[in-house]
Image (cartoon, rainbow, N blue to C red):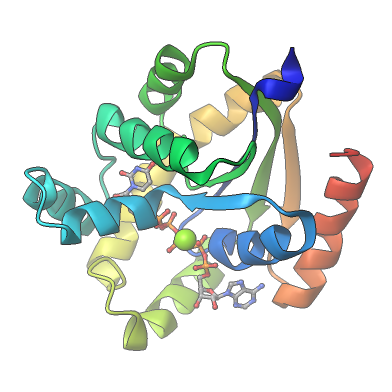
Length: 194
Ligand code: UP5
Ligand code: MG
């Protein structure tokens, strides 16, 4: 039965498109557990794990960490949370990510929708450079940002297109201020009767 399954919303969009910002709000309003794949990877990197250096290099280069690592972290966090409702932020960002997710999760999850934040690259770049002044993120510099954009176009957009064909995608314009974006997001969560 679907009730016992993990109810998942994948939250995607370019680097800096507001995934984290909006997930915090959705979490407050609708009681989801927010799991950012990037945050989980950064925590794993900082934990001194054997994968730490590899993860660190991939992030700085804007490359996608091998799927087994990310899916493993996500699954572990899901089990630990004792919740059934998850916002999966920043994942899956490649076909390989998605294939591995299906392999590991099998029939244990229901994909409610794929929320995609849309914002032009010039705006994203400005936001990320601005955040870079204080974020301490190793990838919030112009060289890494350009690599992240490239990876997004070549590897993540094809996955979004696949979800589009499945009828799962809901696109939200994330150019306006966060409050305005969240008004549009709320319409989707209300409409979905989640
Ligand atoms: N901001 C947000 N919304 C705004 C708005 N409406 N108006 C004005 N400003 C707005 O926002 C970014 C910045 O913009 C912030 O300063 C915010 O205040 C402002 P944020 O909400 O943080 O956007 P988000 O989309 O979460 O940006 P983030 O940088 O986290 O996106 P990425 O997709 O680049 O980063 P992520 O952490 O997901 O991944 C980082 C790296 O980890 C990847 O490049 C990759 O190397 C690795 N990774 C994997 O390998 N596999 C994975 O599955 C996930 C990550
Ligand atoms: Mg984020």
